[in-house]
Image 1 (cartoon, rainbow, N blue to C red):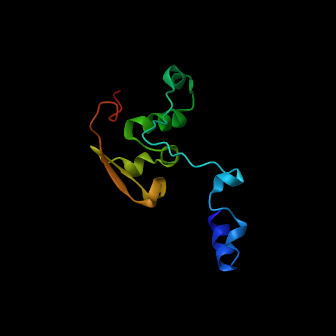
Image 2 (image 1 turned 60 degrees about the vertical axis):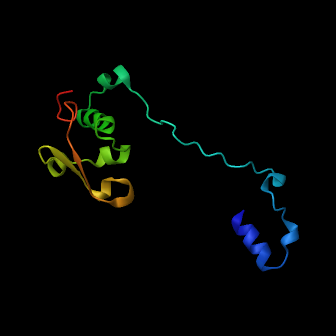
Image 3 (image 1 turned 120 degrees about the vertical axis):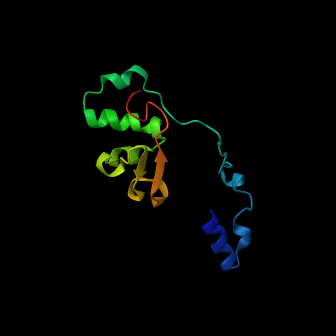
Length: 110
């Protein structure tokens, strides 16, 4: 709609579109903030037999990674003892990151 409003302004026909989009049947946007979008697998995680998929899914809550980052995760690159290194090509925003391993779960004991 922004493009249409811009165009009608440029051609001098601002009256053909109402200023309020709701008059065109377009509802106002409602932004949801502070909504937790994580899904708990619970005991279903134990039914996964592929070891790489299993570990990938365990990475998500343990290190707060996104699904794509977990799929692309390479332990030989990321493991630095008490820290993990996240390659920018795995992460949102394309930035390299370092994360401290601070919990037993992150050490593989959880």
